[in-house]
Image (cartoon, rainbow, N blue to C red; front, side, top):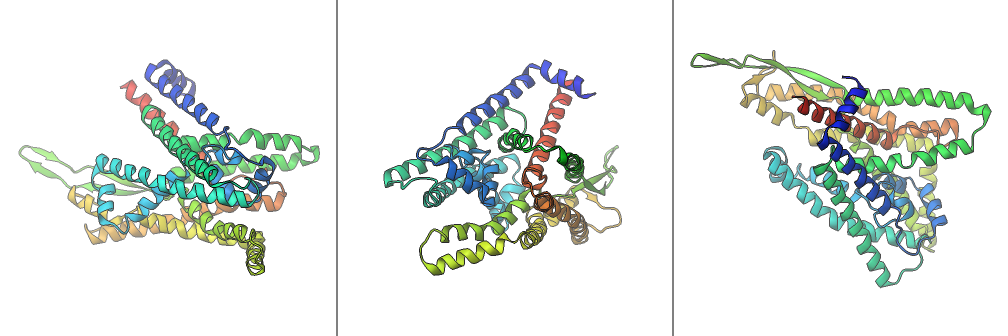
Length: 422
């Protein structure tokens, strides 16, 4: 079935059409909320502050663009994403949480998600307080009295909870993951501004550079799609079982292992580690103490070196890819499940040997995924170094999120169409 036929089928189906329209309405509501600023903002200083701070630039991506004008939904889904990451890391330390997430099925995952939502509220309160204090000291916000500060913290926290609720509604009554679609909408909403900047600064002499950028962009997007979808199949055979006159099993299938098991999470971890010292430098620079000012200047100078920054960033993304894969992928559990279901990998003994074999395969393919992920992460820095233009940069977290969300959305629509065909 070609694209136009599929699009016609989707639009002619009443249920699918209502789901797509619901997603569109919710995204419009979110964009309207992100245009309502909290009171007392100096927009000129805010834009200058965000352009010079990559940490807040990343947070602006995960807020869906709400941080760029300090809207009432400035935190976006950031606290919920942080809470989800913390909960997944806690599964390493708590066997009870691990059992709930991996072994209790849908009910366990629903309970796990509820804990993540509850944890996101105190995280939103802490982030709102920290952002407002920092922005106030930077001159973006005026000196807020206690009542105004408390009011703004409550407004921002409520806005974060509201965005989280909108994302849940989109997941339940729409198609795909609502949280991912909100982030996707925030990233895409910045494209008209970037295109406008390119057109405003257009020079006929730069046409070869623009054509080269377009060709590289196509290659990078193709590479991200290929690696995101790439799998390493491990053959699995189910043993034959005879019950009465019937024979069960004897089927050969495969276990798909993704080359990039970790997604964009390693980039988020690495950016947080790399940009945390810069955030500290920004805070220390506000104080009048000469020692604190000298520490701030030293950290600023160190991280201003783009070569050192890119090398450190590359290594951290590479390491965190292995770390997060180890956290979320458990070869022992897979080996146990295969053994319980009477399945085995040809040529490998069940039990410990199977777990070791799967772990060795994951280690090898993760090397490819980690290297590619690290290259995509530092690609914007490399391109900015060559072109000197921040608009001519492709790669990084935004590209990976956009590609992942689009692929997931298309798969969900295909699944809905296939179900209705049958």
